[in-house]
Image (cartoon, rainbow, N blue to C red; front, side, top):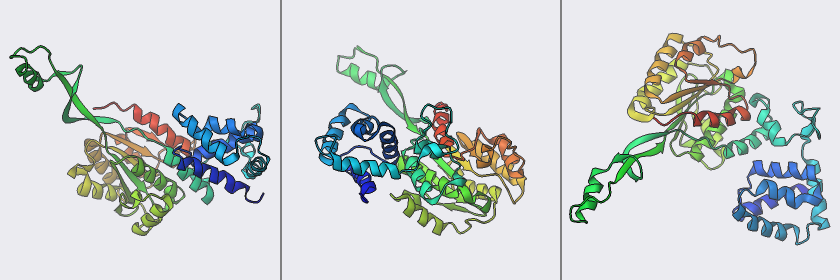
Length: 360
């Protein structure tokens, strides 16, 4: 009975080994559903939360039968699973759970989605890392110089003539073409100064998820200087990647010089092509210790290069927030989107936000 919780973990490992995407977030959904339905409906709880496509059903049935036995009511595993579910935190006790709801129970994942990053424990941060890994930000696309054949588009004279040579010079069909599309580059500029210390780890986990998901992602950290972290965040494990990133950032938990850091980025990387046409995320509270005029000047330079500039300020998650910081006020005229990014839910909203950006 003491090994009940490892049984759930082992079941998830078996599913992943069989090819099902049973990541941490889905396993939390599975446990929450099983808590609501009870052990007798364990099969249906897993089927609703762990299976997303029809072709996955046969794999799920096979792994479930091998692990829990052919009979759903197998008492040994039923008791083990029931004990494991009892050990999970009761999300209904969370302050954000509605008292007027029919069951009054919110899932653990929903609690983490709404909880401010600054309030997360070390264990919750690891869970959020798994949820951020499932977050798939859809980058807006841009037209390239390359063409592809299409049913509708501009006339493709070269291919039309080539086809006509095969039919005695008669152009029987007019070929057409359109520009190829490719995702725009994503650039993350993360403030790791003392005022952002409570959010730095969560933002780096978002950056790690972006690097793992999108090949065209670049990550930089800044406090009093700029540090490129793309190579460190390419590691497979978030904890290892964050540890290596922390060793490279010499000004972690120090001062903030946004203007100087932006100038370094633009001088070394921006005008060489990295920022040209990219979607740039700046994650900072805007508490500039340098000259705010420099912030305005560098933001203007960046706005002429980037496709969109998104500024995430965790302080704006408070209802009474006003952009009074000098650096924030200097940067806002050049920001296309101003959001909070203070919890997982606000990060998920970015996906909807990015979909609004039409391809240029």
